[in-house]
Amino acid sequence: MSSYLRAADARLSRRRFGALAGAGVAALAVPGGARAAEALRRAYLGTYTTQPGGGTGIGLASYRPRKGELASTGVLVGVQNPSFLALSPDRRTLYAVDERAEGAVTAVRVGAGAPEVLGRARGTGGADPCHLSVHPDGRFLLTANYTGGSVAVHPIGRGGVLGEATDVVRHTGAGPDPERQDGPHAHMVVTDPAGRYVVAVDLGTDSVHTYRLDPRTGKLRERSRAAMKPGAGPRHLAFHPTGRHAYVVNELDSTLVACGYDERTGVLSPGAPQPTLPSGTELTERNYPAGVLVSPDGRFVYVSNRGHNSIAVFAAECGGAALRLVSVTPSGGSYPRHIAVDPAGGLLFAANQRSGTVAAFRVDSRTGRLASAGAALAAPVPVCVLPV
Image (tube, rainbow, N blue to C red; front, side, top):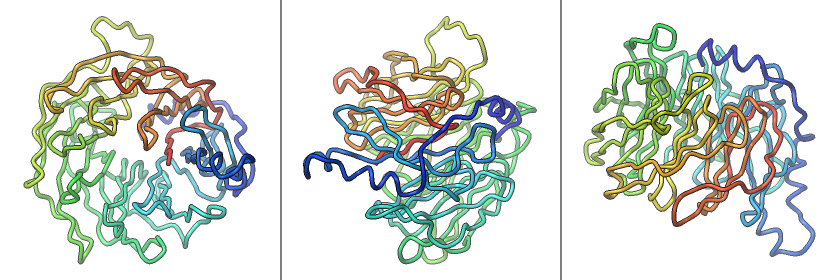
């Protein structure tokens, strides 16, 4: 994370959030029989525990898909700076980064009973890990170290327990922005829909790397590299369900790029950048797009705009090859960072970092437009929301 964002985060005010670990699980036992219990879903919230106003661990929440509003159900304490979260394919293990100078990742058992930390935190071999994902086969955890400019691989053992890193690959290079691109800054790492290649987005070098992961050794081998516009600052990437296209959001120039993707070779082919805000938009501060996601049916792409405090909705046309801006909706708070959709696709959640709120929106399945689903949840420095 840059010094600019750290300074901004330091201005946050402290907010109360939840109770002790396990409270969220108890809250799931809702009166009204099995039908009511089935309707209640969980969500996990990421935060910073070392910042003023930050939380004390991973936030626990619940929501009903038809209603949408989130309710706090507790906190899993003891996990440091869990600024990004990911769930295993079997949904039994939650993984969290520890975004600090000595970066680490932690495994948490979830599901039946109270959440429980598994084993000890494992070092990522780089500073400030800010994103992680689980390989589709469930055998490896992939982590992006922002300040370290590297990607780490950890083996996942029986029961979801993490082993020591099998590989740490450091990117090289820099970009034209002297403050944000003084060196490599890996910001995201994810596996493509076919499960064949690992794709890492680097803000500092304006590049997207494609790797092949050796399932025997847990080592990464680079296969290709795509160059984005100099100074664009690519931050996150989301694949279209077909696997033939991907969308890269650029933090430094407020653009979204539709890319072609060859699943056989792992080659990403960037198209023309498109602004994440309507032409002529007046800003009171610089805009920094953060999250990007694709609706489960592949018809819409969503981008969070920090600064403008909005969620942009794009229609994915021509089979996903082209994008058209549909609408821009207020994010329900200030500085929306991470956005996520409910598994069924009917709800979208936005973690508003500066205002300390997580807002819920109903998604119009026909137009993709967003409408508020009710009052936002107060949470301490929410920077990630993971509905399950």
